[in-house]
Length: 200
Image (cartoon, rainbow, N blue to C red):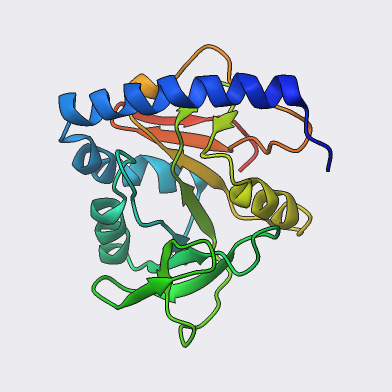
């Protein structure tokens, strides 16, 4: 995989502004996490999903905190999982996890389930982001973990939907993207669910 220095520079500049903007949105809208949780019915109904395994994440910085949404999913009969970095150049692994279960740092230094937790295949993957556009392009932190994961899972007959969690105000006109950047299938914000793919 060869990097495009122009694209990398565009993304790096946008990340600086997007982090600043997301922090401001977190301060302005502390209720957004709970509003998103209240809209989980919109998401599962739109995708036609039955209870399965939902991969959430441990929020860092000003990311939307998916814990209220996770609680809503559990009440609907879902089980939860968290991502684990097991290879800095590979896709993520997902392991079963329940609230209040202990976590340890993975090889990337991120909080993750213990090695003893069972690997699982999610039927829904929820991801954080810095910015998004209406075409489902997502600006992440730059590690490429989710893009590699999406790319690998999209080779399966029935890949899980990849849904970004965000503040409505994180939408921008165009997120710069390259051939290895994987688009989201939809975005869930405090304002509601926006489908990118219509074939679920």
